[in-house]
Image (cartoon, rainbow, N blue to C red; front, side, top):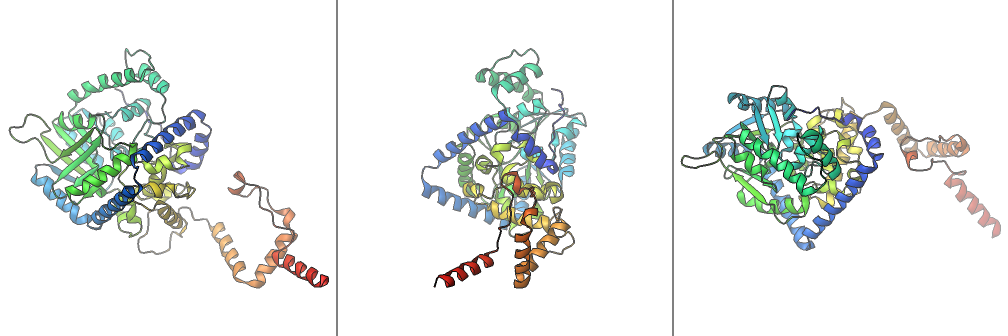
Amino acid sequence: MSEQPVTLYPSRAFKDNARLALTDAKLRHSLRGAMDFLMAKRLAAFPDADELAALRALGEAIRQRCLSRLPELLEQLEEKLTANGAQVHWAADADEANRIIHGIVAARSGKRVVKGKSMVSEEIELNHYLAERGVEAVESDMGEYIVQLAGEKPTHIIMPAIHKTRQDIARLFHERLPDTAYTEDVDTLIQIGRRVLRQKYLEADVGLSGVNFAVAETGTLCLVENEGNGRMCTTVPDVHIAVTGIEKVVEKLEDVAPLYSLLTRSAIGQPITTYFNMISGPRKPGEKDGPRQVHLVLLDNGRSQAYSDAQLRKTLQCIRCGACMNHCPVYTRIGGHAYGTTYPGPIGEIISPHLMGLENTRDLPTASSLCGACGEVCPVKIPIPEMLMRLREESQRPAGERVAHPLRGQGAAANAAERAAWRGWRQVMASPLLYRWFGLAATRLRRFAPKRQLGWTQNHAPLTPAAKTLHELVREREAARQERS
């Protein structure tokens, strides 16, 4: 499969991207149907409100406990995995992670990597890094494979091709896969994809996967999947590379069960997934299958910035279920591509500023109605609206202001004129004399009120001062009452 140039949607152009997405009637129709389906599935998966509340509280407690001991647990994870025969690598940023992974592939003179689903590999742009160095990386998750063929980025962290119709996929397979007849039959399309991918596992030099949970107690990597491709990627090639963010570590094996239950039911309304893989090391002597090498790449890439702040640390509780996206009135209208980030929707709005800097994501924290739906459905109770408000504050904070835990890109959305306007407003509101003068001036000059008032008039009538101030109306009413008496 030749490498397709990927269509990128820069996060700095979020507003333009969003406006463009809103004009795409087919996209909005596809998203609306898919989101309604997913919301209904999640609701049906949690019929007992008391059980859901207890499970969410437990999930939150587990994630917060594990994050409170994150440095210690990461060291324990490395120790256990090393004892199990795996090799652990640490990457400070995307470039270092890519160099580590390419080095492992190059050590085998590898030319093909077959990949299970991994959002972190999307985050670091691994496929294109490898392609530039002569290594083909093939996605084996069906949704990921579809968007890779189309030269696009995933639009959803659970269902990457949710924006595609079966007609889109039929045309894609017909045009991009040799000797493939056009068909819109879903089962036939799936079989076409399986037939192509089956051979890739046998030809691959290296298999790569993500990690849902990394258990420090036992040195176990847990992978959740439905298609079986994750199991093939991690067992057929001689070398398995797992890549994950440092926040995915949990303390004990028993911590995984409630998180797994929350993940599968919140993501797609399933009580369990078809496959749950637990990998603790390479093939042992006498065993007939499995990789001969297992590598784990632990990626920071801005996560330690979130971790260092007690409030923003809650961002790292995320278990990547996508429920916040499915319920977000913004995401469900514009889709994931508009955000220009690997992680779109509400979770992307609060994690991407740490990964990419506020200077590149300054519009994302404001891409929310603050309705609170994301926080209400989050299975581990991340207070997403609270995080959004904090990031809005940091994006407006002057870049030179000293704070305990400065964020990269602090002050990216700061505007001197806007700050001057708010300072003036504060002075007017704090002074009774200035307040009266301002009110009188506003009422007398009301005809000069601008007809276009920034974002307000996109959806509302222009604000026009009343003909008289409240003080004037009260005085007139009192005078009239006295006259009557």
